[in-house]
Amino acid sequence: MFSDVTFAYPFVLWLLLLVPALAYWYWKKKDKISPDFTYSSIQIFGNIPKKLKEKLADLPAWLKIASLAFFIVAAARPQSFSSGENLHTEGIDIAMVLDISGSMLAEDFKPNRVEAAKKVIDDFIAGRTNDRIGLVIFSGESFTQCPLTVDYSVLRGLLKEIHTGMIEDGTAIGNAIANGVNRLKDSKSKSKVMILLTDGVNNRGEVDPLTAAQIAQKFGIRIYTVGVGTVGEAPYPFQTPFGVRYQMVPVEIDENILQQIAKITGGKYFRATDNRKLVQIYDEIDKLEKTRVEVTSYRQAKELFYGWAFIGLFLLVADIGLSRTYLRKLP
Image (tube, rainbow, N blue to C red; front, side, top):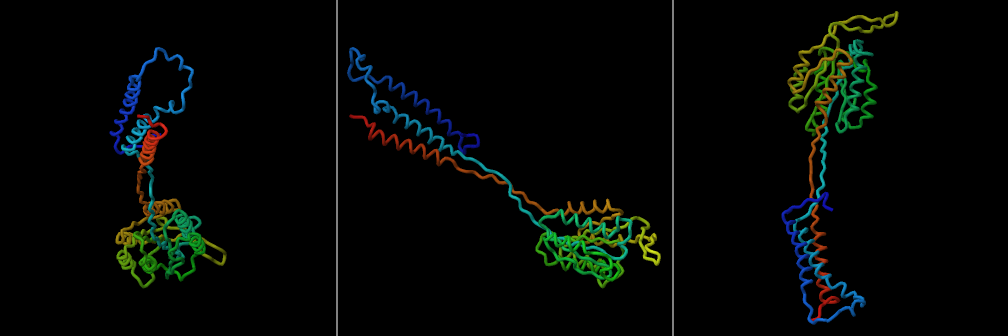
């Protein structure tokens, strides 16, 4: 009965020791009651059955004692507690900014840089739950492939459609950041993030990359920059009259600019030299930018003394009712 119950005033329960004491006192008092007249022998009454009223003669006293016990327990304020946790999730807004310039066809990543990046971004999206994610692509120009959305199936479908040659070639990093800022600047989210992946040097566009980074910083947007490409040279496919031929081309990544962009906005710069490293980078960003989960523990008390008090009152009323009616003692 008391396995999941606690008492607000447990010291009151010591009064329960009065219950057996009162029962003992009543029993002894009953035995000491002297008859008003004596018999030489009462054997002649031995076979006379007791009436129900005689059998219940002690009931009012026991009802009083029992009601006292219930009132004492009620006065100790028994309580039961339920506990648990409330989870409050706060999604973040993320703009994925992907370079699709011709150099992203280099095959130092398998099958090539752009397909390796698409695969990692797809896995990143699949691992999110409450976050709005948008997709910006760029080469010589930049445009939004998908605005911020939580419809990940649509987003992943549009990601699959991306390929090099969709836009005039070049590397407009500043324009790409500016486009990403436009996606995020009106966001009400407390956390706004841009993940910029490129393999080159800014050589196109009207917006300077560092100026774009400063604008992003003013809107509270954090930029993680990822430079992709092996160290030294990478095999690049060239179409010739005799089919595809491979030529080793130098890997040129403006790491200094990418580091400054990350520093200005409070982000971080990463360098991916192969598929495995690229996966690790996005896993790290994923952990850094996981949806914030706030856990609030609660413990709620349920008062149980009402039931005990009600039973005690019921027994007391029954005692009074029987004592004044059916079991009333004659004067």
